[in-house]
Length: 283
Image (tube, rainbow, N blue to C red; front, side):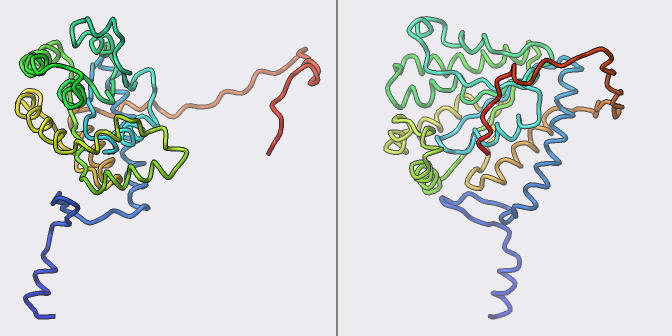
């Protein structure tokens, strides 16, 4: 290999995936991923303590194409946290009654109280995405959504809520691979709905809808943070790392506890073991 070609290969900084998404670094090994994830999850516990202690109200929105990896990131965030402090909001299809309400009304009901963080697995942005593309709302409703959403989010922020929005970007080929993986795996097939499959046939429509949504709602006060999500491991680590950087916090981890001795069972007599019904010992 010529010297110039060697230098070019040596100095190449970008690892490309489908559709040209640039990765500044190469793939991460499973060992390094697990080590970094464990470290970040410890930091998430510290952040949780800070949110509780300081009475913060945090809303984190996760949006993106189907199978973009939102659920996997949310699962890793909540894995070691207290569900009474950090909870997931994943609303079903609106009821007939909810369809007659102010559009944001059913989401407002799930906003956090002091000392809570909610992770929204899809949000009010359904209107600008699936509802628009699938024809579940009118163009007038979409126009009103684009007009109202920046004002609505500014109101949340002025009220003291910390609002963070993530868009998970996945390429056409990677989405197809993940869809096929779900089809082939009976334990994950439930993740695919007829709506998900229909979204494959409307890839370009979703792209146009996302672009227009960003045009109106990627604001200085409430920006979208795009996560390159073709590499699941990197998407998880990058998102958690970024989330931690968005909320200044201190380590309030309690001092290590000392386990007290068990109470002595003076005078206590257990009932006969035959009085209890046990789970069959299959294994």
